[in-house]
Length: 270
Image 1: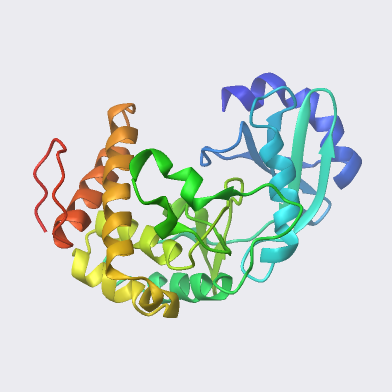
Image 2: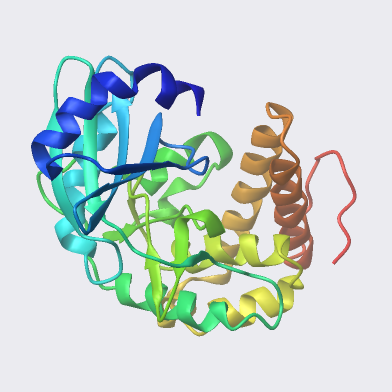
């Protein structure tokens, strides 16, 4: 990564104050919420380090992830340390081995992902940590944002790159948590399952294994399907990356399955 190579020396001293002398560095290309993502080795210990420049407009998300971590350590890598100077804001996490989740139909990863999802369902939004409300986050895409309101801490970013599969699933990247209805997380995952090849009906069957799914009124699920379709259409329109169009197509398929009429380009087929 050019950013890492150009500024590694600025960050190295800050990291070594926490880890001791670094013997090896592995640069990672994955990660959309960080300017630096590396695995550093010191002695026989490895640490995953993610960070943003101290003057980045989203550097504050590092502090939020630091504060959220104690609540989610049962499903996420533990935060070992945080470090800040005038150049960088860095977080050092337990290094967890595993592959990115495979969401394709029949994948043995999916039950592990569902188990991790189930384990975060009971976490309440914390006091004293700024977490965006669901009705605020998606207000631009709905006329009934109150349907999304709730008190559960949600991850919402179920990109398979955010789920590491080993003996169990580890959910990473809590930079953008949301407070809302608990059923929103299985609904967000359903869109990713459709994008991976599941039919909307099959994706909803997986979501239905999470008890909160059954607490959602049909009108709320319908509205969230509409929200996802419009949101991903906007994201795809502003992106040249193929994965965004794939998600936009999946969201349209889900909305069509729920018999939502959309004035969007593209004709989904279930």
